[in-house]
Image 1 (cartoon, rainbow, N blue to C red):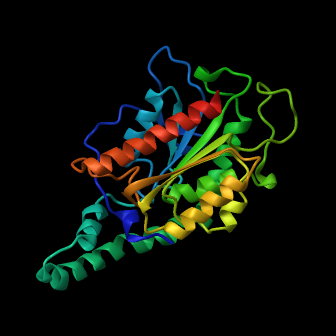
Image 2 (cartoon, rainbow, N blue to C red):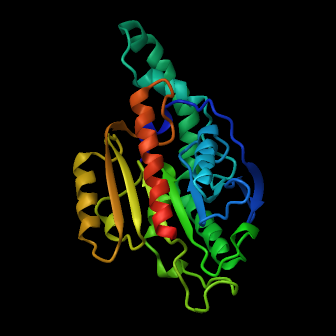
Image 3 (tube, rainbow, N blue to C red):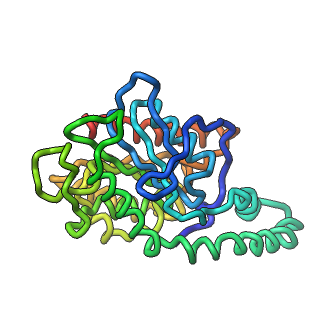
Length: 294
């Protein structure tokens, strides 16, 4: 389930520079590399609760694109993403405060938070949104590559955060029922293939350890905070041990000292420790996809 840290954090002061488009029937934020740079492949950013139109997720998409990727950030929540207005509410709920604030202010904040969170959970539970995610990736695999990527071996990656981390782990399980045959412009093989070539997750939610991790078959890079309320120390070590035991699945696990849940996408820009943790996760993802797509 989601934890309070899923709905708290800071808002980026940067301005997105990408564009909006409808791709395979889904509203999508598109971030491209600089002019003249041929993308290494496509990264689909599967967001946290705040969705495709949240400035932080768009700016992060831009950063990935600057490193040479074509980045799609789709609206997998069908217009029902969490409102950023909830961020300061949860900050107030979770921060240490005076007795007056604790007794009189925080209860009101909890009621405000429920107003936002309950409808979102009912509408956007992974079980209700998984079909749309799978269809989007199947369409990417079976369609001609976009113009900048006229290649015989298009690489597709998924980068998932919080809510999106669960979907990314599901993709990394490579369910045989979800496999599709690539577009005819791609490889000569007619055999159905996995929907993604590589996965990256940061502080995912809804993960069941060991079941979800045992089932992973696609190369995966995992970034988790040392102080994550969603995936605590014991589960982190179990996850790490399971991935290390998989000789046929390339993996990378990094535990970020002092980092809390949500550090990769909703860091406060005036907090140097949070900024360092976020940059570390970004560097980890970019390096992982560059290696996986080469």
